[in-house]
Amino acid sequence: MTLFDDLGFRWDRSEVPTSIPVHSMDRVCFRLHKMLPEFVWDASVLEGNPFTFPEVKTLLDGVTVGGRKISDQEQILNLAETSKRLLAMVRSNEFSLSKSVFTELNGMVVRKEALEWGVFRGEGHEQHYTPDVGLGEHGRYTPLPTLPSAPELNRVFREGVAALHECKPFERAAAFFLFGALQQFFFDGNKRTSRFMMNGILMSHGMDAISVPAAKAQEFNEKMVHFYLSKDATEMMIFLAGCHPAAEAIQQFGGRSQSL
Image 1 (cartoon, rainbow, N blue to C red):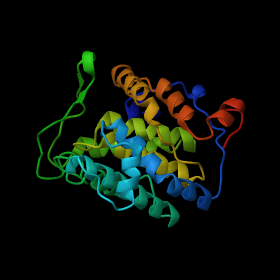
Image 2: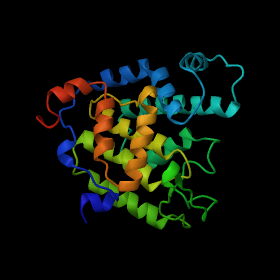
Image 3: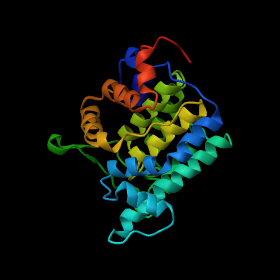
Image 4: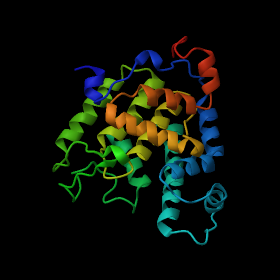
């Protein structure tokens, strides 16, 4: 089996940057900590959450915001708590590209929001319902079926993670995000959880975390629809590189001119 076979999609590997600025662990963690409100707001906008950036800052300061749904408030707080947990994992070298970390983060991201959280589809009480992904005018994308004990999802995850080790850090991080989004290991929060994993991989290798800016939410959604339809991740890989805080430097170095 090849890398692409194990993941379920492919991309033009020559388009993926490998010249990503590397910093100390303290530096990349400090940046995420300082930018936590922006990261949380960006992520919430991708989910259609109506909280404004000032309201997110107010809520993270411990002050409730009037006129907003409790479910929208809990989604913001879940994103913030998951971000803090990811930071703690990276700082203590607890983060790994593993099922245990993946499921723990999902359990925080969609706590009280999903049908079940913190377990692969089929490993909890619900063992038959298979969710799908709406693609607008293009219909819906249906992942592997939910089965008791999730044998296929576990196999796909195990083989996919093993295959990703041949990739350099940035490529591995971006590919894992798309892997999680495509295979839909959980009932909900797959893209959110997989982006946290992506950033865990990046920060563990001294690279700044990526946040998809709220201003690029429509572009993100359009490119994700194309990814689900084509199973070609090249466009999304380039998009994610463009969202990296060092995007200009990456382009200046020509993407693959240096190896990490």
